[in-house]
Image 1 (cartoon, rainbow, N blue to C red):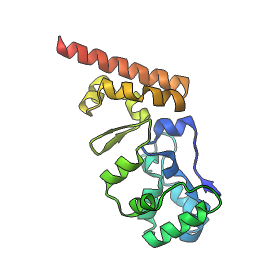
Image 2 (image 1 turned 90 degrees about the vertical axis):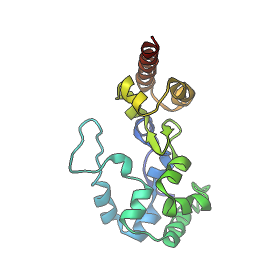
Image 3 (image 1 turned 180 degrees about the vertical axis):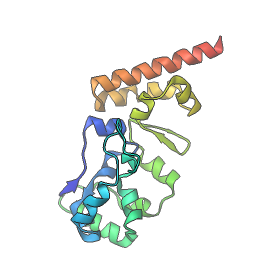
Image 4 (image 1 turned 90 degrees about the horizontal axis):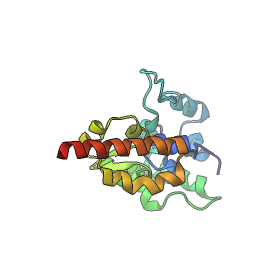
Length: 184
């Protein structure tokens, strides 16, 4: 399957959803909008989280959900093109998941496709990058607890770089310290 997307630690660190949602089978965009329109669409998203362009959308939104919405791809066409793209390999998505991408509510999508390295609180996904770049007070205000961070530690060790793990460990330590200070 020819696809556009990636599977590197930087994406795992920054993305809210499972990486498979950021991979676009060539059959999907070729049959839906054409390569030129697809790459023009991709260019509407920020690729640099550290120096974002305010005229562009967050890069986390460059995913299959947004593609289906922006190009108004019917469920029938989406499923057909995705299956064509998956024909040569083991399927990336089940039939139920393909339908959920097209018709699911945001809460259903978030629950089904959350990045294993991210934290889901209610209907909101917090990517590791967000966790690492916010204060202990902001983490607590978002409903993120030290227990949630502890639960993710093993996942982070498998998919992130040493520097990313260190940053997240520091965030966890700061949150634990803030909670202890509140108890005193």
